[in-house]
Length: 575
Image (cartoon, rainbow, N blue to C red; front, side, top):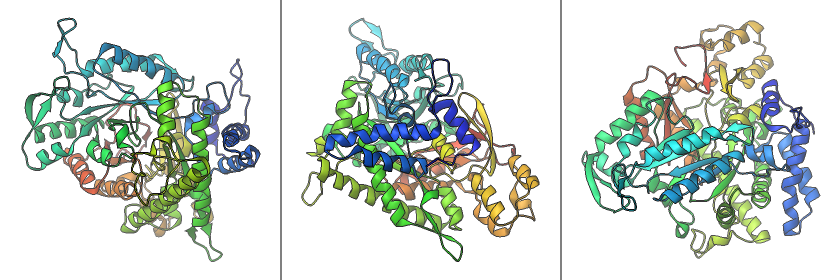
């Protein structure tokens, strides 16, 4: 089946995904790309006595119809020389020069193969601490982050994309204030997202407006005490100015750690949705919700849950096969990944789904649907993983895991679901990204090293044609950032259901994230979008609300606070 791809999808595929010869000429069509990936991933079936040909056909149909797409490294590398198929890695950084520079080397190897990396720098001794071997003073975590940043700058990922990092520091580290302010200069740490790991103890101190201890990780001793409110306020102000740091609720992440005997979760992948143990990797994939809608003869749409279940079952098998076909960049990563076999199935096209169901984003009905939908996806994914465990055996480190108790069914995978941002994947699929609302109906997207696209939400164009209010003049107006609520030629019902990011109050963004988190094994990538004129108080409220509602982390971005942002539009009032 030939995939139906729009112009922007073709541009992305040609620039980043399709094979080229030594002269740089394209040697692959999108259809051939899907065939390449399907054949490669289906060949894992031989390991378990199944017929690869049957699954090659099914995997090809799954991807070419755009019902499901795996993460970018799988599309780029499966069946090619690199054969590195995972998007997310976490590397340990221990408190020694040898460990730090081993991690720098490993980061370069991972970035070269197309992956992104996360680190906790919390084990490093603070600046000005004693270095016994030399008699000198330590330079501290932030100083060493510059080394990682420079190494990333030097490595172009597999020739297709620049590397991305997540730097994490615990809120009780003595260098926390320096870390929070690390990205105040926009020229610093350009290859890093940073997040503060907030503990329950810190959140309690904040609630009670008292001090909490900063602890030297080398000695375990308290170095000083800080007022929690002061530290929190600095986080709020820096995030208001430039979108960082983000926040990870690290104790909550560890309460949901499925394999606690293997260690503590200290960091996540670059977008924060995938908590991982040191040396773990995870491969992600997303179901396109546009493709599981059923149109009734009387008009209107509903979710085809049978079709969704079939897609989930096949996608879980696909992602489990990816683990066996992966050529891991390091032996330690291969061992950890195969011990836990974590996968992260998520969704894209949620905003489109709501429009087709006539549900405005941010309403009580939309939150209810989010919970119901993700509950179904995760329960079906677990059922599929349990069936795979019967067929192939459970993940090797199941003993001592949350599944190692009376009445639990063995699972093939330690986790099954993750909500990723699906940036370029949603361009290929022609749908809205992840669980985000539309940023705007007409906007400018910056990707691929500065290449920009002018985009109109495809579904708005489609519905305008279906319902007879399409005109070139209207599309031009929308493309320039015009507000459809000011147009008499756009039906009122359409104005109500095409909700955009800045129409939604911050607390409703957080509520949506929490609704999905309730039934997601790993974590949820979601940006709490704020208009440029929002106050720092809105950032503070968003952080506290996210903690109260059970989120595992939160990212807030006030539009226009970075020189280069991925999405922007010409209507400065909103964007």
